[in-house]
Length: 631
Image (cartoon, rainbow, N blue to C red; front, side, top):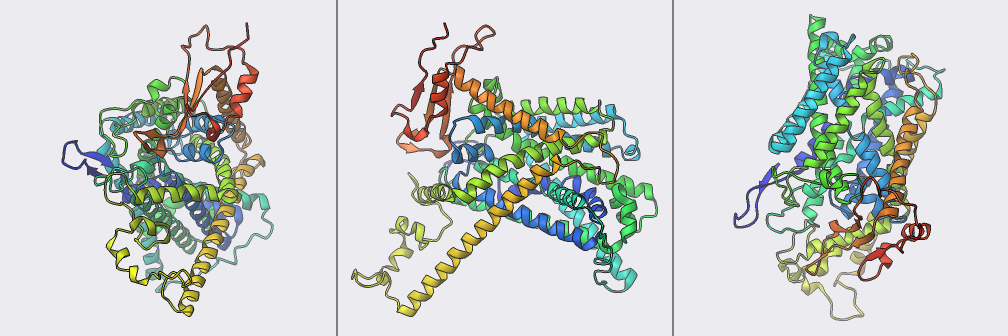
């Protein structure tokens, strides 16, 4: 976090988010409690150490394809909201339908209730195998209220806790990895080769088990999407130039996100490799849930097994704490963005902001309404957990809802990325161009003046002027006085770079789409728990609940289009300047109450609104429905 103010010191210090904070958010939401449980189950499912290691590597490639695709969208629309901003830009027709579907899904399932329940389960370590559902719910609820109050009234403390917990997670995994390597060297006097990695091979392992193992691996890599949820708040030099399209902000966002995904992938791979080095296949199968405890006892030479269990449980609780702190910070801002668009009930309440922690981006305080709604939904989910047969299963279910639903919308974004990339590229170049030509101050862009796309915008730059002698005045001559061999070499280099970028984009898009399709399909296949026992809750319940919620959101969009008195498309024009973060539909509603909240739809008007095209609206940008003839 950085504290910045307007030039001249006329305004109090405001909060901006650094690239380090972006990395901490991604780390906190990716490295949660799952990594300390899943590795043993992945090995048990595939019955092969080498194949299990390769699955974690595949998961890393998947995470990189996801963050690459997400950041390409963020480069085109570098504003708070993530998928809520990207989806209507890529799929504008019919208006509101896809946007409302995502909004209702996100508000319902983006709750940090899963991590708070994990904290409640592990903070009382000695009773993890016999948890008290009511006590766990009390602890989880109290933690949610405390953290949300911190984000509301003490935002700087919340950002500090986010940094501290992310650093703790990385340090904790590094300690386990290094202790395991030291143990191998001391006990065996050398670092052994990958013993047993190819010998423990289950030839008769069903393909369904291998698919479930990959699903668990991808489940552990979720969390990469949170970087785009706070894209507007990343520090981009706005203390010098308050422009919405700062390319410094985009560069800082990319640096933080890529650094975090790289760190997570490396830590995951090393942790799994060292664990598989240390234990044979039978020990891993028998350990399962307690595998991390057994690992700690062995590499740290802990004599007391209970002390090791207590230590690991507290570390898992601290990891869950970091996930709660980060997700509540990012998701509450997305919910405020949703409420601003007036597609939620009581949007006037949920779009409000406090007077604490004024943002350096929009000069708004902490999202009071977003935190309030997130708190209500989290407490509802926690209260429902006490009615389950085993409250230890509830965090997986709650996380599974969000993981599954987010993959559905990621498929839409992946399709748009593959088949309509020019739309993304056009907006990205527009933002880069507008960033290089700010309205009232010096250019703020990380690109050098001789970058082709920005060269024309820096003609007054000394660097550009110093190169003017290279430009030929003869139209018959090449642009620069270079020999033909040099021109050919430069052209070929640019061609190779262009082909390489296209290939990378296609590869990332294909992996992104195929990975999310895989995630959407797997829960539809009946499976057992990773330990072989029957599931108390069938896997098909997750897609049914999530898809039903998305359909409710789509129906809500139809209801809004039916009852709203007018629809205006805000083109973001303010005092002759276009602010692209303001682009979007603005809805106006009549005075609704319990007697007139529903009226028979005027079908012709509804169809016309469904066919609205934001680029073909009249100059006033307002579409009003024909008078209803329901009477």
